[in-house]
Picture 1 (cartoon, one colour):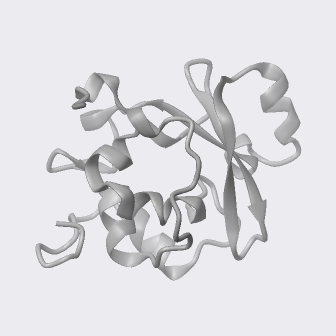
Picture 2 (picture 1 turned 180 degrees about the horizontal axis):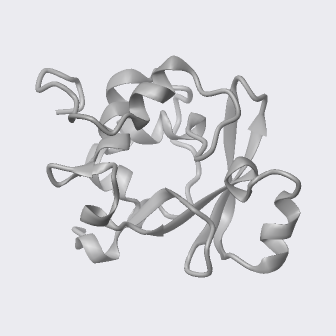
Amino acid sequence: MNKSDEELLCPSAPAHPESVLIGIVSGTANEPQIIPTENAMPVTPEIIDMAGPVAPTEAFRFAATCRTGGCIHFKNAACQIASRSTMLLDEVVINLPKCPIRAECRWFHQEGTDMCRRCPQIVTKQFAPSAEMLRIVNESDPPPADSRCQ
């Protein structure tokens, strides 16, 4: 089923009243991993407080309506975070992880299951991002045409 841009969710959004909680950050600072929640949960002040003393996006993964052209990572009608992730990151799971938003996820609709197998390693705000993660969030040009995500 095709979703319109207005219906798709960014799976790496900041925490705000319109966001939903979709995962908990686990692992280490050098190798974080997202553990998905069973269901997407509305963001509440209590959830935000639970993150303290770190930023909410260091402890949790949130989703919110994809801002498309209003986001610095959205260029050429695509999320460059998703494009670069499928090109630069190795898969970290064989079986698709549970996902409370897959049906509405921008990354899944754009890159398919290739992105889902990389998604657990993406943390919105990382303490010690790898060189690959820094390349992924670089807001310059989209990945080259010969990348495996195209």
